Length: 255
Image (cartoon, rainbow, N blue to C red):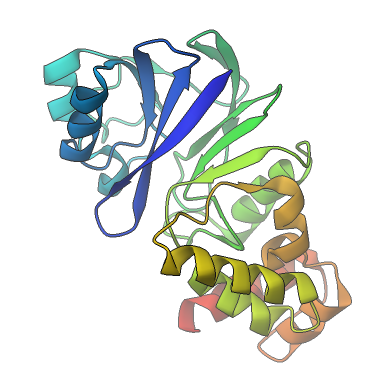
């Protein structure tokens, strides 16, 4: 059984640590800084075998150089020369094996053009989606288009509903606050907000989420519902799903 542990980093990042059973070899996803990873590895007497990178932003790659120098791990990520230290580039449709578990590489541009996500089928199914899908939200469009991001999210919506969603940031409360405005008739959003407020009061992560949960609370995955479409219509165009998504994303930017 593969376990996944959050390592808090920077102001609101999670560096996810993957470990198979009781193996001392581990993988981390998007190490935005090295010190918290090193502290965890040394405390638990673990060996950093591999690193997965979703995209080039510094808060996802800033710890690479120090971790590579110290542990010489296998580093897997997109073919972007802006990322220093990747020795195995992957693209949409590739398969990689991490500690015995097979992961599908999914191109998910939108937040950035090089953004990749990693999905492992099985029990439990795992999705490491970087800054594409958040609990009750999605990433800002720094480089890609609304259509690219919407297409990426539709790929996620087709995954098994019990898939665990490991996003890279603790943005849940802000996203649910927006979701309450964007999907005002949704009782699941109100309940999720109460649960997540309690978790954060106890300093607990609100992640992982699941695909099934996101289909119920994430307005960007619910653009075809009357409630979301009507709310979007108060802010901009909503004549189809993509237009509604575009309006929602622009509304969130100024919310």
